[in-house]
Image 1 (cartoon, rainbow, N blue to C red):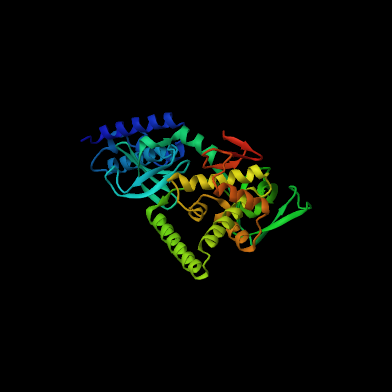
Image 2 (cartoon, rainbow, N blue to C red):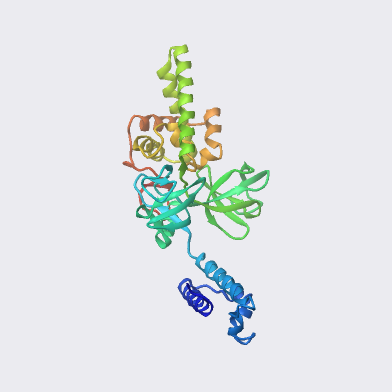
Length: 362
């Protein structure tokens, strides 16, 4: 075991290496330990004089600096899979599965060892094999492609305007804790957002902006959703039997929900754009990597913003979906697709894929 000067030199060398590697400045942190590092302050021998107690304090201070430098490295991690990645309780294939990290989902690194990484993605915390993960620049590149900035409203109601001007026409109002996708930060005062598939503007003063990446799900959440879906299906079946119209009720409920989502995600797009959104949902239903029901896919944690913020439910209950949305939903449920087996889409921008109207599908 190293003691005294040995530990000091090892920690100092490690600290300097980390500083050069990460390209960060640690002068401010180091200034708090100058009395231990400057030979003019009593001499280095005094620092490691057991009777002075300086050795232990110096080592702790230098260790803290090294740890702070190491934390500057990106802690972003992204799934590198086609469908879903098992997340386990321990760093071994034999360990219990605690959740799933889906394609293009991400999180942050908590710990790494022996070819495994402990991740946090939403409420999911567990170990995943490094073989199926992306780190550092690769993770950041994927996140920039599949993630999106969102704004959360921090006031009771907020006007959404046609132009970035307080005198501009008001297109509508959004309520506190509603979320909108960010298109561009115009300046310190205005942000352009996706409002009902149109470009609109909100005041930066009353919103909080954050980068959103799809998150994984815990097995508890998955099981709860499956149980709720099973209970809902049983209730629907019971009512259908009572009314002798079981098949009609089940089909119309799914059709109505899918049409509501299509309206929220592509209401102003062409029929082809609407069909593409419906096809993505049905591709997920059939994929085996997502819930196997339309409601399960739409309300899966962290997937569709209109489902998260309640807009889908409002359209569903108010009957706001248009005839073209219903037609697209019905075609998608029958197996029609104009995007192949794509399971993702977003506003067209920096992601490759099938471009339809203002959205790209992959």
